[in-house]
Amino acid sequence: MKILSIESSCDETAAAVIENGRKIISSVVATQVEEHKLYGGVVPEIASRRHCEAINGVIKETLAQADLDFNGIDAIAVTYAPGLIGALLVGVNFAKGLSMSTGLPLIPVHHLRSHIAANYLAHQDLKPPFLCLVVSGGHSHIVEVTDYTKMKVIGKTRDDAAGETFDKAARTMGMSYPGGIYLDKAAQNGDENAFKFPKPKVDGYDLSFSGLKTAVINMIHNADQKGIKLDVNDVSASFRKAVVDSLMDNFVKAAENLGYTKLVLAGGVSANSLLRERVAEECEKRGWEYFYPPLSLCGDNGAMVGSQAYYEYLSGNIAGTDLNARATMSIE
Image (cartoon, rainbow, N blue to C red; front, side, top):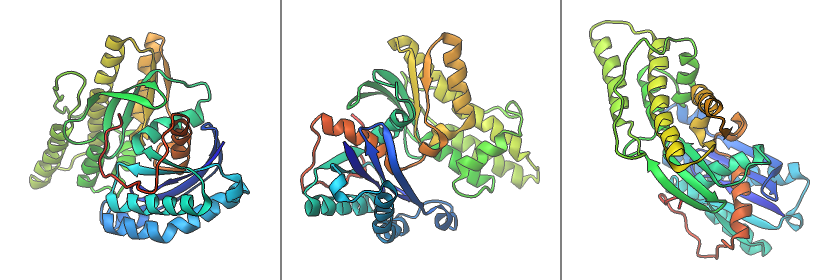
């Protein structure tokens, strides 16, 4: 089964053709990063306009790379939640138009489920059940994946997401958008024990990053006011360690308490080098299996949407012409 999938939840206009949820036939991503760098973050109105301009060309290129027309496509899939509402509406309405004009079924896909599914494209033997840590600019969840379309959130951030925390810390240090990437690079040349940051304490498996974000911003501002020059690499390394420690403590604790021996990492922050290293280290120490997507599939892309769409289709999740975008929605 070949699915043409569309992703437009934030600042990437993307499409892909995916076969049977596991094989990438073609994938195209048009990014807006350079434009949003001017503002230090994503401007929703600009993102929506750029999606309108790019989406037709992206889909044409995706089909051309796959050497297919709509006669060779079996279904249309689209991210409909969660995300920037204006950006989502561009993809949803375009997908609805394609579905109506071609007669192909329309598959609605949840953005975070797609990030998890990116692993199915990279690891052909990966199957549920498993425990997944989903970390991105807007989300930080620990999710039980009991089946391809059956998921339960057992822990999540109560305030800021890990990705947002990295970006805000990086911006305070003068790094360009998207800051998390540059902070990770700087941290690789720093001393992770140079500075001590507070350890968030939250009940259960929930997470919290607001205090960490405030601590690093205050530390940098106080140093600036006193004329003290901090080593950016050391601050980055110490802060990165604090965030990753918080994520891994709860992730590993949840796995041990719930009896999971297969751990999966997903989302944009799964590209963070220390987080990937720690997942591998903790799992190898315990003899557990672990999976994370290649760097090319960590960020938003159409391929992950097409992968999850295949399993949504098998479960009977087909949308009508009344499909609408949703800015927020639980992964469950």
